[in-house]
Image (cartoon, rainbow, N blue to C red; front, side, top):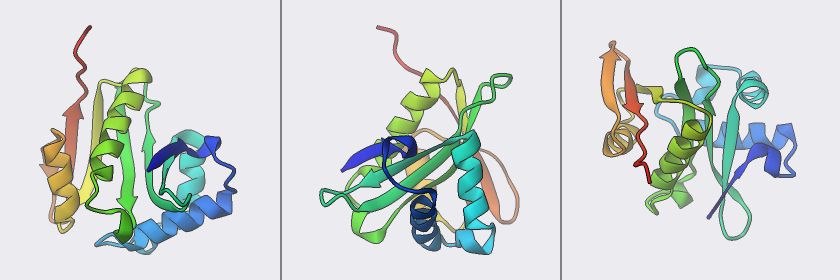
Length: 153
């Protein structure tokens, strides 16, 4: 598996939108039922970062999008992370999370925040394993946060 920033690929915006749509359909609360996937993807491309996961056959099997541009609060925001079924259970989600921590840290962020639907047990388990804590919740979602810490060497 390889992880590339969207700008490092030769994919057109429409292809990235298609991948976002495929992954978004896998969520317990499908992305396309909540947002216009094209607009959502374009906003991330313009103001945040999108990373794509490719398998050995160079097929996109996952996506991660986040914002790490709030220099006032130094809090990055993970908007989406997801894998197609054939890429699950291989430790890729953990690798993406570590990648997120490193990239956010490089951009000067001190924390990472996210919202997750309470019915998305698989994602909640991953986030908790990675050190995220529930900051607040409502009837539908949890807001989770993690302090980014790296050992000084």
